[in-house]
Image (cartoon, rainbow, N blue to C red; front, side, top):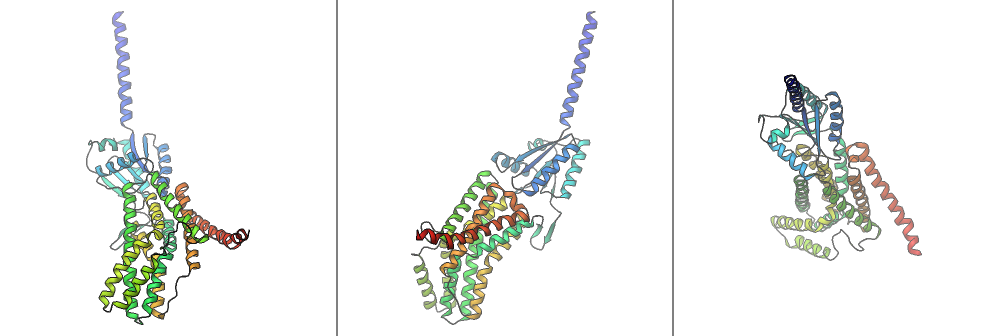
Length: 427
């Protein structure tokens, strides 16, 4: 009897051990996928929906999603995993399965991810976090977006999936280009050069001035973008960018309604006479062309620093938008070129007109106020959408809604200044 009881107990223990082994084995056979995403990233949203469907199709798939816009810890994990896979990953979405990593998301990448999941369901694949700790094979394969891209000479592969990003870049750069501070300095300089009656001097000095100011401004933008890339996509960064843009927008709108009263992002009146005197000395005393060019370079650098408060708002919000959308590499390079070319269009037009006609006109106060109004309302709408609805800038319709709202706001403020303020003033 005792022997039978012992046999029965032994049998139960064996059954429990077998069950435990199988359960452990089942856990180990789970396919673990790490998915890094960011709020406002259109490709992340597409892949998130794709992975939800994939989990229903493959019950053994375990998706561990990590939000990097609100967690410094997840950003550090992404960087560490990227280094282990031999990649310095700057953008999202980023997907890790076994020994493979994908950056970005397209239909083609989706097919590759599903094929990998199917393979791992039949063959044991290393958990990416285990690989990070030094276990598993060091070999890996990196897959990047290939669909909807073009290869450009000297540039590389450029993403064309987010045309809204190109549209928003073009529109922001266009409004940024009509900066009253920069236009005032350029028209003043060209107006003085007209009196020399030398088209050659106008062309050389004008091109030198534009080249130096554009280079300095471009370096400022590149510095902003690099800083955002280094910091990452934390929520507090979005808040800071939105607050800066909102503040610049309010001050510019204030300048439209009450010009230069209180805080104003314009070249101070006390500085303008000094700039004018230096320009006059520049055109009168510099007889040699090299000396004139050298003096123009120094003046352009000084003026760039002086007018930076007028211009900083748009680059801050633009680079913030690109960082949120995970734009980097060759795509950013193309967007940066688009921004700078469009930014310079109005100044090149003014410069070309003066060079051909040898006639110039000064920027009037009313013109400056109008430019500040458009820039201010656009910065306000960009700040609000960037903070509360960043996904709006991820498609053409949303982008048009944001810029349409800015235009409508400008018209409302024009009506307020022309019709309402006079009535309030008379009372």
